[in-house]
Image 1: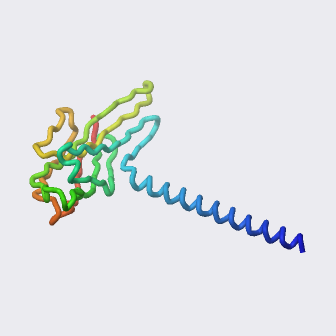
Image 2: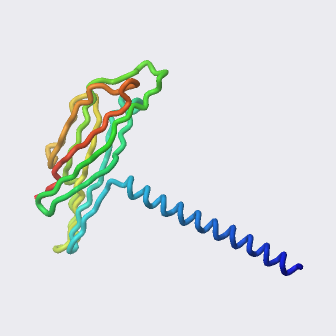
Image 3: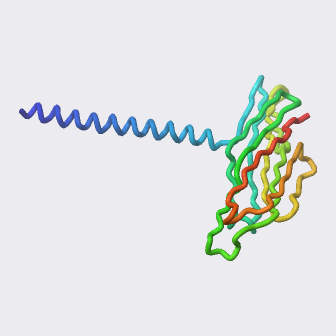
Length: 176
């Protein structure tokens, strides 16, 4: 009888441990998929050369209490010398209904691409960082002189009555 109880207790512990391992594995897999879906950076490597496309979002300080920008995805195509990226996302109203500000008008949303860094590791190896910069401003955006490409759109109204503004930008990322 004692051996039966011991085997039964051991079986219960093995089942508990097995369930814990399965739950941890599923959680790690889900986190990995979520992280890869949220990571809008992409890298291309060939023959010791690499190009990576980090994305940054800059929201004007005056707009931060009222809007949030999420990126739904980024795609790219092309080879050396002619490539582009498409960035999709949403500008969302996050202001409180108790705030005195119920909406904002003429928000300038812009994207630009530029060579943020060029690392030469050796004669035959390099790594380029072609930055994808997304900005939301109350005034006309300032696009750097060294931008590869840019696009702009003005959001007519965003607020409690119009809480979302979807966007899609396509910019060149070609570096000569």
